[in-house]
Length: 307
Image (tube, rainbow, N blue to C red):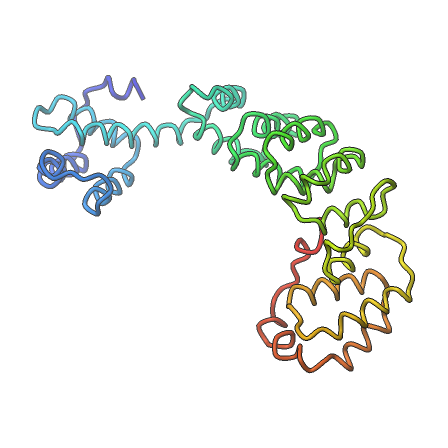
């Protein structure tokens, strides 16, 4: 960009027309009436954004030597030009990582966006570097971005960094990475913190079948208990399942999400006869909500029912 600004080129017809428009409509405004963010300012910014890097650079050169150009307008053109130049510049991966890690670089946001944009196209080794940088030094948004990718595509060597990030920040998205992928011993150690952030039912679903963990049923609703048992593989007798289901069906009110969780768990637990019975003899009091059209048409969101 510096080379472009050093040039003092003659403007072409289109660029002359643009500069004339700015002189006629923008100069007085930025000299006397300028208020950042109002509609007129936004209109001029949009106009500048619509230009190419070369057009902006050539117009900026003319403004620089134009004594009548308000400095506020010239600096605005410069900022728009710098942003467009950054977006058009392909920086080496290592440079982007360095810019991201150096919080004094003034390019952290730019580096973050550039790394996310190219993430799917780079090697696994470089993806690993991005995730490490985001988890170790990133903002909450970047940590959560990294956590979502680790949740679905776990990397074994990330366990120490995930543990460090979790202990430091307790982000909700990161809690599900811990619950899904971290060793039993670590999840047992962090169970109270995980319950506070993710929810106790998810801790039970993860640790229900793990030695050393005792499920506190007083902290679970009936449907949460069914979900935790189904998810964890905890051994429960058929009689107990039937008794708990019978007690639940005596409730006066049924919540959509509770019913969805219950039906999912019953399917996982092999409660075939009970499901058939519900289909034929479902209590009338749930029909106005559970059987309404918008609920039946709702897509099955598996992620809501798994860690």
